[in-house]
Length: 264
Image 1 (tube, rainbow, N blue to C red):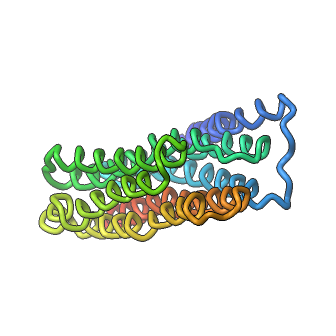
Image 2: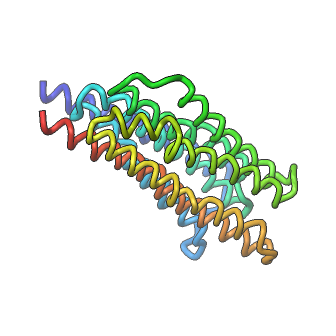
């Protein structure tokens, strides 16, 4: 039994590593330049990609440790970091090769991972009580408005300031739902102590941690600084935000899941 488990873990690790590193090897085969140690943006892409790989392996391996009602939430956390890690390898290579902001890759990543993070609120509440579908759809609508507004501005399909306002409106809508809307009320009235703890910590990340993203947008597009400096700041701040928020979300869920599961 132990040997079989070790074999399964080893195969999982090998497949995960191969799937994540394939983009890097493919890019290297085309003769792309190497990552320079004096390139802070490129280094930040590398550091977070490694951290996301480690977080993915950790979350997936810990699924068997937690109670059944937490397994879906922890699986989603692993999927978030897996998708993000894969995109970060691509984005790093785009940056190293072109020194250009990988806007499209970043928004493809966010279009997948940010809704998954919002689903976490719905999933953890659904595990302990009945939750209306309206909670799910309101969180999705706020997420899409936030992302679409940001992309329109960064892709220069709309003025930077109007697009920024649209993105902030979507974020504000999400904050209202998780602090004062139906989701917040369900958490306060029906959730277990562990779920309440996870919910409160997660919404604090959305309020405080996600504030790093508009800061990056502001530094990248609204300060009037030279294009090269703005691009560097934009990517470093966005990379920091993804590191804090995507891994942080998963760690919060894991900590609360383990805390509640170990009591049984």
